[in-house]
Image (cartoon, rainbow, N blue to C red; front, side, top):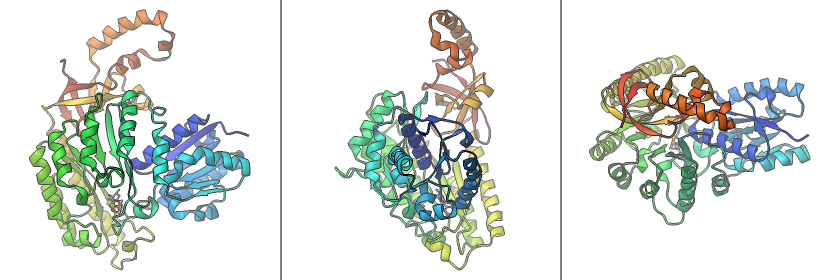
Length: 478
Ligand code: 5AD
Ligand code: SF4
């Protein structure tokens, strides 16, 4: 029986989110329809993450639930993709024999072929190779298919990592740093632009290590070229490593207005001793120097970061140094995690593991401090006029917030604006007359149609209030 429906569960980072969307688009092209839950699906794919905590255990418990579904519908095909698949390989099928396909992050472009092959032979599929360039080429071809009324999109330009931070599993699961060709990236950006996207985030595990494999040019050159594209209004890139923040890349923040004044630059710890034990290859002073040089060329730049708390041998003094660094930089946003030993990484074998309760207490403290700075940064926007890019909300939220439209600030803060009355009533009368002749609008509610006029629009908003995670404002007529 040919499968007709699919469900993809995504775990983890933006790279995975992008991969999940692409897998969905590939399956749709292959004639399958997406459904909202695993119980209605003929094909279920878990796109897994291995970076922290008991990620693998979570997958096995989800697979336990799927086993019960598969007992009821034995034809269900179950795939495990992503970094846990890459790290565990055959072990997944040994522990969970219900799994039919195991494939790593570099092989997702072959999902339809794997599915066909499994259907044909009934044999478990195992794909753990690293053909990154093939993945890039295959995914570029179908970028329009998955875009639905969105203004912003991700574009993968680089995969993998050669840095080998001692805590991190990525170099083992995603493989070596591989960059995509400049001409392919620009062609994909043009395709996104033609599909209505005006805000592009370039993605890569080490995005600022990107270097065109043909011409050798770096990320600053690519950003300047993308900024030349009419219709592309906002550019960002993530995730960067401090070691690769070269002079040219800092300069581009000063001369490229379309590059948003916001940079996610993980530091992980405020202690040089810990940074060294992590093999980060940069010091605190180096990080602060980057920050100062960025602020010199782009005074309104805001930084975000990642922190690992309780790395092996972290002392009270090391932890205090992290708190001081947080106060010194005043991050606009940051992510912090308890150190989680990853099997096979050097730090996991370190004998001075920090006790769980100490890690938990330090994490609580760090998160309080980070939340304070985030709130302060949000409050600092009150009274400013920010250009807000409006976007369709996901379905659930859209029906809850009938009288508001939402968008993103240059700093990625969600910004909510009460619906402008005038526009609502004006559109109401216009839509009434349209309704007679235009059948297709009958399926969409009036609010939705009125709101959708704003999707993809960048408009000035006076910020009037700030919360922990979002802002509220008033649309200015211009
Ligand atoms: N434990 C905790 N956090 C980790 N990260 C990566 N590996 C680990 C680990 N073993 C965090 C880092 C990285 C982010 C994506 O995940 O902060 O920047
Ligand atoms: Fe992991 Fe370090 Fe590579 Fe980032 S730079 S992916 S933290 S090894």
